[in-house]
Image 1 (tube, rainbow, N blue to C red):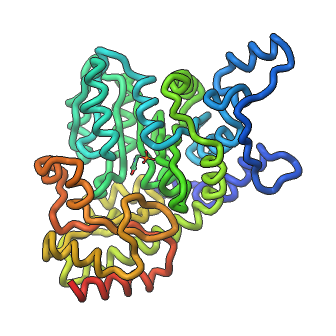
Image 2 (cartoon, rainbow, N blue to C red; image 1 turned 135 degrees about the horizontal axis):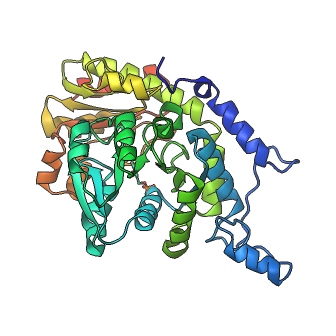
Image 3 (cartoon, helix red, strand yellow; image 1 turned 30 degrees about the horizontal axis):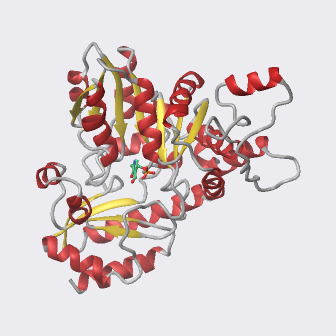
Length: 396
Ligand SMILES: Cc1ncc(COP(=O)(O)O)c(C=O)c1O
């Protein structure tokens, strides 16, 4: 049995409800929304305490908010971390963390493929402040090792990665980093803590765009960082300056969303697996990228570090760019929208989506072929989704 497949896996929802219940006001079944900007100090000593305590959620909302800290605690319990902070977006979380943990003269190792904003932070923004970087092929542990320098402070990971679902070996990279005193940071957005918990493999910092699966209903923007108390306090300190803090209402919506995370992810996993197998056998479809397929080059690693393969798959239409445009147009209830991880299934053609922001060279380097389709399942009936894909492929 893979080392992470413990009873935590089966009882994720129970675990999070218990975690949440421990924070509960005794009289409310569902968590209250604390919208108040600030708390009231009883006297000068209390004021001093409120203003100086790290992660205090009762002083002033930029320092912390009770609804947001409640959500961060629930996510930290699911991920197996000591503490966490909610941010205004996934990028608010990533940028604040990078600013908190690096300074001029430091070096970061990152993957060649990350969420676009993460790549831009590492390759365009931080170098302006003297932070160096090397990007590597995430599928090769050796390339990480070769990239490490004496001034390397952080290794950035993201697995599975958008859009081709490459994986990174969390255990091997964490061991390597630890042996050199380097911290690891993993974007766990696509896997969710239901399918993968990087800290169980030794990763130091876990990040989520809670906008996706944790929120889960296409109606909020939020980010999360989970780590040790010590690291979270450092990031909190920087968050006072970046100010990219989650609005309490968004945290409240995400607390509602996270209660059904396990149910949603189970359905999303099952649909993605069935769709991957369906399109894999379809004559109009070329290569299919999904870690749950035996043909995925890292299927064995997926089995080792994931307990579910996720709701995201990509496939290449043999008819190329025009076939992609027609396929997306032909879909009857699957929606053409960028953000994923919610209750509704969405499909995009990455050559169209990334083409607007990335140069043609970068699009090609990332393996984004013209007919590639990225498909992210929602919680609809699996047969309905397959029927929609089937008719859309037939009318290309
Ligand atoms: C994997 C991943 N990480 C980070 C982000 C950034 O999150 P946000 O849009 O909440 O800032 C995204 C957004 O698409 C994402 O897909």
